[in-house]
Length: 157
Image 1 (cartoon, rainbow, N blue to C red):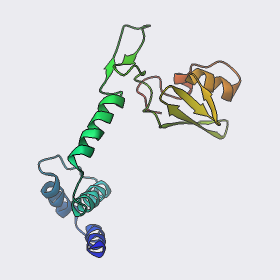
Image 2 (spheres, rainbow, N blue to C red):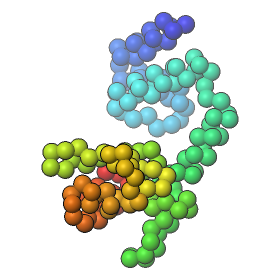
Image 3 (tube, rainbow, N blue to C red):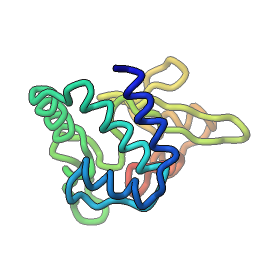
């Protein structure tokens, strides 16, 4: 069975883009199909493997949805006036990526990696309360943490 799945996935690489679009619509219904060939191949390869394994269980789908609702800062934003606090219904600043994410920055030739925790940040195996404290540890001077790491607007660096 593995050989069959591998063969199907390998065959995707030789199919014309128009045929990939048709397969995409067949597997995903009326969902809008992108024109990006490599994206189509990845999505179709995933669907072939998913169907071979029996798909995602309803319980797992439910758990995933609960996690998205809990941690997705994009869908949970509540804004106040300028100068006020930004927050989400989960109490997290909407500019922050989800816990477990890495915030990275190239600073003076060094790659700075900060792990976002549920409550705070981890940098070089030390815990910090906020990004400004991490920025100060990196630079030696005070910085707005969101500005330093490029998170000032939308939670993506």
